[in-house]
Amino acid sequence: MQDLDPFRMQTRSWLEANCPASMRTPMPDDEIVWGGRRASFKNPDAKLWLERMAARGWTVPTWPKEYGGGGLSPDAARILEEELRRLDCRPPLQSFGIWMLAPVLLEFGTEEQKQMHLPKIARGEIRWCQGYSEPEAGSDLAGLKTRAVPQGEHFLVNGHKVWTSYANFADWIFCLVRTDPMAKKHEGISSS
Image 1 (spheres, one colour):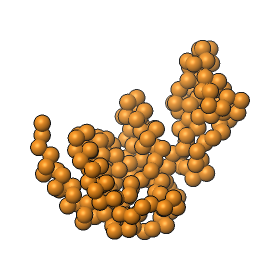
Image 2: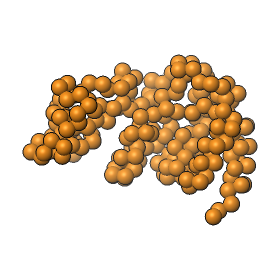
Image 3: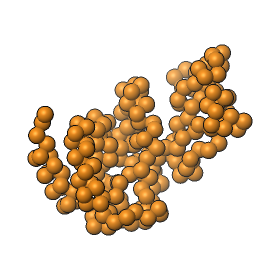
Image 4: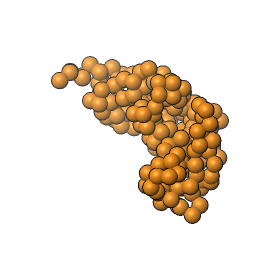
């Protein structure tokens, strides 16, 4: 196993020098950083903290560097998390893009999709919302009626979504849609 003590010491030193003091306090709800093209920062230190962490790839420490991540091993990422907690550092970014969309892109996305979306998600430049539930289907995803029909290199999406968390602040939406209307209800659903 790799000796990670030097990484811990370097990380501790960097965090102590770069995490603003105001980012080492409990975070009020109105100071959570969600990112996006229209992001606002009630505390200017929050913007600085996001920029510094994103520059290191530490908003998404285990992602590959070519997609805006830190390229850290799971053990190194655990050490980073421990050191962040030790200083009571606030999370630099909250993001549905990080939690929900990026894992799908990392696993199934084309290289073009990864290059287009992942670095912007990692830097907090784009804010995503989710589009899952629909009228008459609620959270029963097998009841989805919104369809995505191939139109050349794109899809034409027709339908309605409800419970699109934070859509009024988002730049983009990821949603579940029916791509195969002939399939059984629990099949033929894709993310778009």
